[in-house]
Length: 53
Picture 1 (cartoon, rainbow, N blue to C red):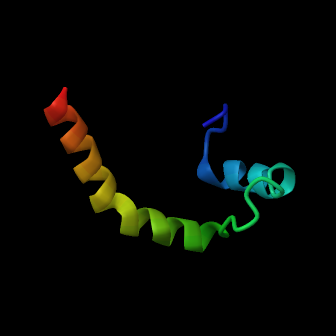
Picture 2 (picture 1 turned 120 degrees about the horizontal axis):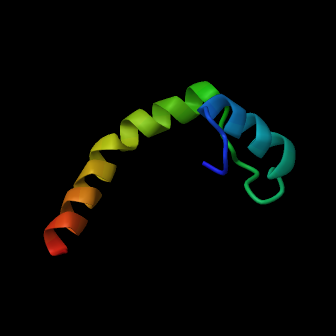
């Protein structure tokens, strides 16, 4: 994302430079937990989009 090769660098950049745009940015452990929790929803959305196309 935006030329960052790992999630940790992206989160550091976002906390340092984008905090005003996204004040509730989670720290890395919380971010990973949210991503794992959201995975089934993301898969369902991709499958639904693919079926429609």
